[in-house]
Length: 60
Image (tube, rainbow, N blue to C red):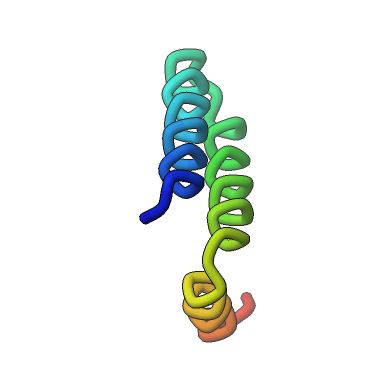
């Protein structure tokens, strides 16, 4: 894990905690969506693996 990835994780962890303290489940959900989007941009292999998982999930 590089410094940029740690920075992203720590920033979103803080947002997640703050939304939890405000009982804001929607904010928490969007925190995770933005986190995954941003962390994928830091590593091509991670992006590829996450895309593969996404593609394997059936649509309902």
